[in-house]
Length: 191
View 1 (cartoon, rainbow, N blue to C red):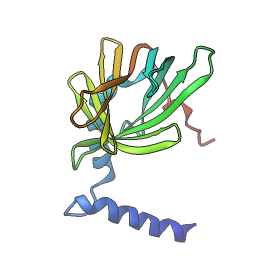
View 2 (view 1 turned 180 degrees about the vertical axis):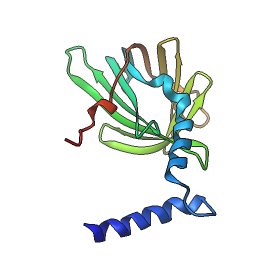
View 3 (view 1 turned 90 degrees about the vertical axis):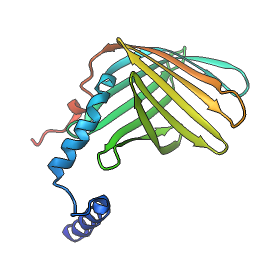
């Protein structure tokens, strides 16, 4: 195990240090910078619930109850998100997991998303009252725009094609229903 760990650690340090002319920074300094960058997104933390609608390419509209549970992880240097969409009969029809991180060197945010068998890394841009993130999809772009204010979270999704008006296919309107100790409370103790 030790032989595998040391080359892996060396590779991580080598790759991670490419943005630092003087070598890798002190991990405490790096984590503090990441935590500081993530602080403006603390408004997302908690448990959220509300109606959501999605218009399928066929034109059919599906209604679900959307929930989100969000919390800080790794000493506040990451944001962890789980979204679940419940069908009218109570079964889970949609489930997604995401991790938002901040890169203090480039001063950018990235969301790693897993949903419906797909995954990807996407730029997420905080705004004055929410955020915007996009999924490149060939000639089309899927753009999600969220406004989070006064305990209410409204997010819309638009399909954007060059030379055409955006097509709204998704909308959710959530209300913050409480705090969440997830994922931090789930840690396994040493004993």
